[in-house]
Amino acid sequence: MEPPQRVGQMISRELGAGNPRTIANIAEAARKLDGPHYSLRDYVTAYIFDPIRALEYPYQLVVVVDGLDEWRNYESFLAELAISIGKGENLTVTKSIDWQLVRMASSSGQQQLDY
Image (tube, rainbow, N blue to C red; front, side, top):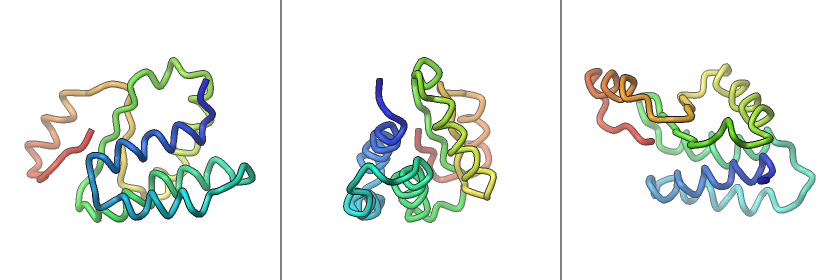
């Protein structure tokens, strides 16, 4: 079972692969969080939200995490995401592709939808 911090790193790897402008922020997170004494919030902020902010998208980013509810530690990870999203982060996290959401995003004139 992956610890919550590792899942944040895995999401950032996928984010960087699809959005090269996030790589500098992800590399900075790896340099900054170099020990076991950081909180889950530190990892979520550095590996997920800071890179997303770097994209400066004018619309919401959708992240699909397949099998999230099958992971033993998913509740603590989702709790940290919910806190940040509640503070105004422009992100939706879902466990599967919601094609209705994709259609709504496409019809609203968004230039790109990442998932």
